Length: 60
Image (cartoon, rainbow, N blue to C red):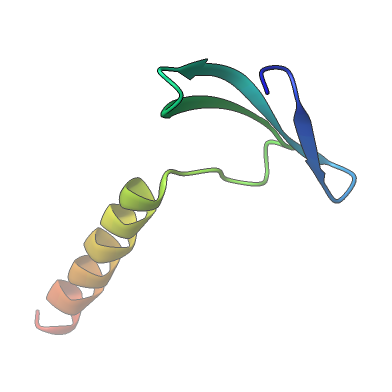
């Protein structure tokens, strides 16, 4: 339901910001700046680039 919030520990919250056509849910995240928050596909892309960068350096 829009406006509902889930707390994770004491410093992180996730709030339902909106629901469209009963299928698309918008979420808002609130966390300390030292805790990174990524969508999974962005996180995976970052990890892949880091791995490729390390591999390229070891072949130099």
